[in-house]
Length: 140
Image (cartoon, rainbow, N blue to C red; front, side, top):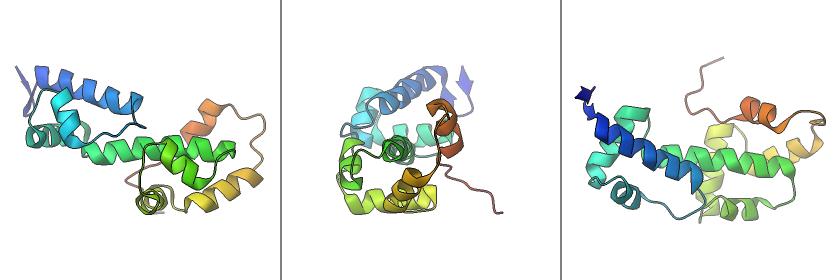
């Protein structure tokens, strides 16, 4: 049975790979390793992942990493460099560029703003919903 162009078995393996990215986002993960985990070739994995979830595996992983970075920066106990490394990014430049692309401001500016924001009394789950990075922003 096929769902779109992806088999049900492939969807199960893709979901497991996505769950692995959610769980192990701070670990070194690349498409080849994720494809092996999903028992697929890297090309088939990338095409199937995009078809199933609407974005590339790399894009999904970086969005998860940025989401976690936002939470760590709101707490304010780590430097931007430490947060970058804590979420599994090895390049501060790539981390900062992707953060700025997704969030709309640099990690340093986000951290400074979060330190001065009155977030007292806001549950972390609510803060996460309202500060989640959005890849495809609608024009204002």
